Image: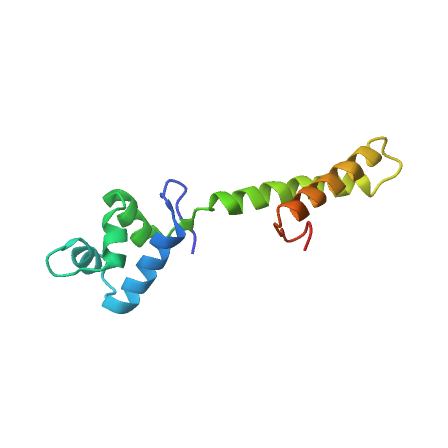
Length: 128
């Protein structure tokens, strides 16, 4: 399925995405209009997942239901991705002894590994 270039695909939290999925299976509504009515009707429908979806701006919720969504990275996931990308770029330099910066890259890689070991953090592709 191709999407028009001007269609908004909102980024929502993992918790919000999970709430949409839980309520879609619970409510069993295929109609976006009916789903939105039930989510927003606070008098008849209560619970944590409803509260989560009621906290999303209406235009974001509607865009997510109609166009789909992406899940925002948590700060921890973003930090892991940043460190992994930095480590991989250093590994490329360190793998080439002909490069004058290879020793410095190797030292930085060891430093990253040491810091992660000290704080007991595992990052796939770095120290796992």
